[in-house]
Image 1 (cartoon, rainbow, N blue to C red):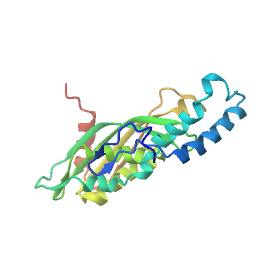
Image 2: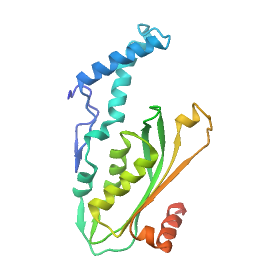
Image 3: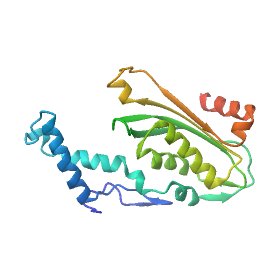
Image 4: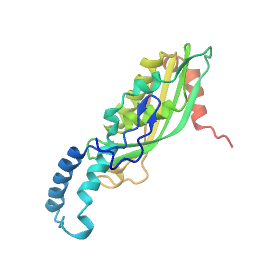
Length: 211
């Protein structure tokens, strides 16, 4: 990878933030996008588009850098033994991802809870796990399940709950063009599946305001 275009090479506990570009991949992808511009009826040689193929290639590499990250290692880097068995909730986690069907963005918020079973995890690691899975070509349903399974399999808690609310530009900009539609997905394990009161408490907490 080249460091010439690095945004930030600072190592982050559990993984190295991938803000660097692979020059060979950038050149290959940019070449295809130059052809695509021509196929769309544009002139890729005009001033405003001269650097567009390279910019798009760099943007795509950044938006899909989650393939280079192991989300379970993020959690393992900050696991601590702790005698705490009540619900831990991290809500309103920003989500930005790319729909694999149309290569258009979807974005929104994730709300995540787990009930520790001998181990807790540094709170900042949960949003990083979300980002690691989101920075890939995705569908919201799979993204929800992947986050749930990673936390369950790594921490082995008594239960995991994930709710995700997103807007999809493939719905807003094309097709049915329903600008205000929000898609909600959920995934649960353990106590959140078997105990209605626990699940209801989680849903109450993620909709409650601190004001």
